[in-house]
Image 1: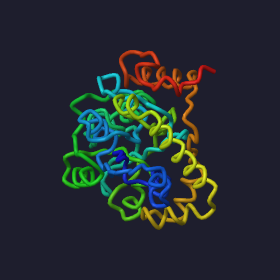
Image 2: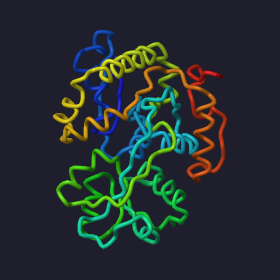
Image 3: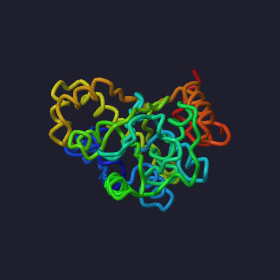
Length: 288
């Protein structure tokens, strides 16, 4: 059967691509129709809502927020347990040089409720300043942000550090700071209808992906492969890969999930704290 899966066209999702290329899915009768989603988590949330994707590999904060706002999906497992390191960028020749100069500036974001949007609030909270709703300019994706910073529509942009580093190396962007997610950065979310109809297929998919992640993490040649595929300098790929920790299993610790929800509430990403059954596939939640 065909299963529509979406994720950002970035190095985090190499394990999926390797499993597809090595026919681990097709050998089980599953045709993974992979869709690159350069618009990020906001675009994937919209695709899940519109029944254009069955599965999305999305940022934790954006997925939780959108499910609470009515997205008919559930988080079935963590995908990456390590935090995501976001770079904070300005145009290469911008007079802005430090985080203290960020208040009252315009941010380029891919979409509302995307990671680039929500992490602006996390960073502002960390540094004790406010961000207003009209401080944001929707640009769609990384290319849109590049254009917005060049033409002055926006002055700031938050994006994953290693994906964006080539633009820093070229002088197009200048990095003025970093902000790490205080929670596991990626989850696998699935439309509730798909879970109900195809639970066995879903479990097979998760098992294949988790094994692919384990094999990749234990492959000493992985940084070189990542550098070649994604245009990242090999020394940067080594640094990123050293910090990377996949989840490797579908079970999710209930205490850890509740701590994430408390943090999301603290950073004003969600207005209230839901029960775990409102956002998660409860069969994969372990009450530890």
